[in-house]
Length: 323
Image (cartoon, rainbow, N blue to C red; front, side, top):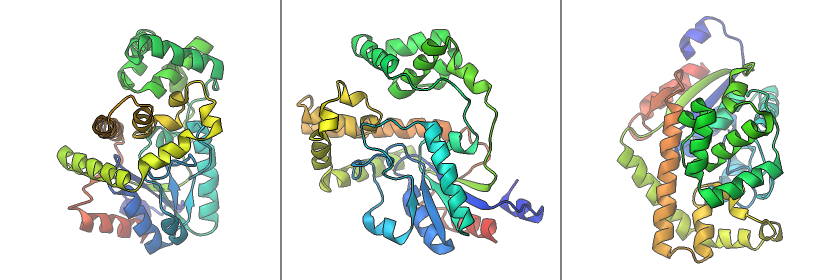
């Protein structure tokens, strides 16, 4: 149902806007602009922005931007603390209820597909985290490689093996953790999900340049700007934290799997040159964007728009939805 037809049908549910898209597509800037225009508040849907200290490399909103518009679900965990998609969904639902109760419009903005799915569709109940088992899987990955573990996953759970990329260490680890702890595949758990959809009318927009080369140029330019802004100094500060230094495998933490951070950490360990670090970080960001686009293509009720050429259409979408 389009925004106009929903309005005509008398849909009285509170409105919310979901701005999705690959990294570096301009979601945050548009969310800020719209929030100021319609009296909205931004709910971050980004698995890196939840961590304190991940600022420059995560493209976290600046202090000025957060003063102009209220943001939610930013800096809710320290980088050594776990934070699951289920926890995000619970916290986001609380934030949405609060925003709507105060007569504001929630604007969901980010690129973490699992977070969007958990919030908008609900997650299947499944076994909780098992830190000891997770560490054993990480140890296996260091010995045998994530590709080998992905092949193992594909044998026991072909659906997850096809859905999860062979380089997506975090999701491979979680799928194997669920299988080994419960004897049931993560796909089976997910199929049992009682879809708990939000009691909101959501406008879904995907911001993405149609030309992949354009997105790649944006990614490269943004990463170079991060370097100029002191990204490596930020990672040095993280490396100095006692809580991270005491971790047996800090680079296996979800926070340090964020693109750019792992590559910067390895560079500061002396494992790569400056040029190699930059190339590897940009490549990892491009791979992230590719995975995000693959996920977004499954969002059949989302409208795709080019942030560079579809400004009129973007404005019309907001106007029709809010009238």
